[in-house]
Length: 335
Image 1: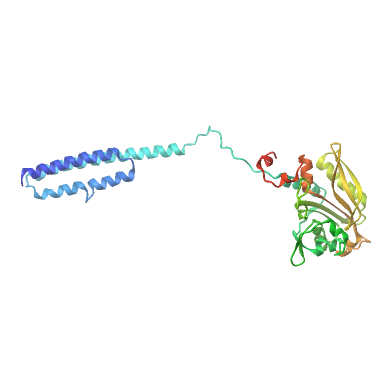
Image 2: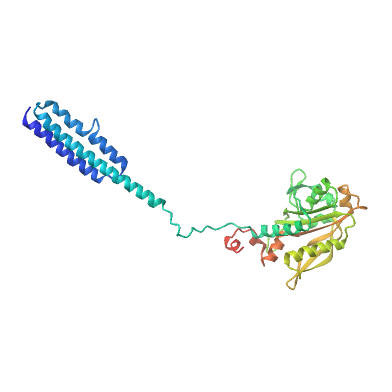
């Protein structure tokens, strides 16, 4: 074996050591560090490739090269372990920093949801009537002509149908124009005494403006029992509006006409010194009682209805019903 071969192997080992040390010093990732270990010290790594040349050395030269190779290997292993500890500590420190919880920091504010002013008004009305002994009743929004008109004493040729411009659907169906249909359905399935409050969405072919909408919400009450009279109706309305708007609230009834009540009236409410038109009411017409199988000689009752939007507009001093449907957060955030 020539001296040049021994010198070449020693030179290759020094070059390997220098190259490895530079690579280890600059590596910044645990996976990359492991790749470097395999590249330099693995079974097929660069150190193993250099040591394959030891077969060409003499017996006297091999121990010398072996000692240098072991020194290079041990040095690189030490550097790899040192770098491994350094990267692991850096990883732990970064993780701790990212997961650190500063209990003194203020919380991140998140906007909380709340009830829409219209739904809030409906819930308030229902709470009051439930407190007065009424039960909440609901019915379908797509109705038959019978429940929406005929059972309410409004036959096909009745002029009262002109009072409500209706959305008709195929198959003798329509979008209900009032929640009075709920009263009929409830009376058909229940015996007196009855006291219900019926909230719900109704539909009429109205031109949308500041006080009208083609879709709005109506709340109606119905009470059926023996010996119910017109005074009970006024007393109930007065008790309700005093609870809703204050004890100084008064109620005024004005003669009117509805096909399903007789006598009929419209009612105004005096609030903050002004009379406000709120809705319609009256004693249930005997024909309506007969339609559901009640004996009008034994039972009597009253009904009243008003718009939920009207209640919301009065309570919140709104001048345009469209504010309740525009989903404008600048408006809704006030409530």
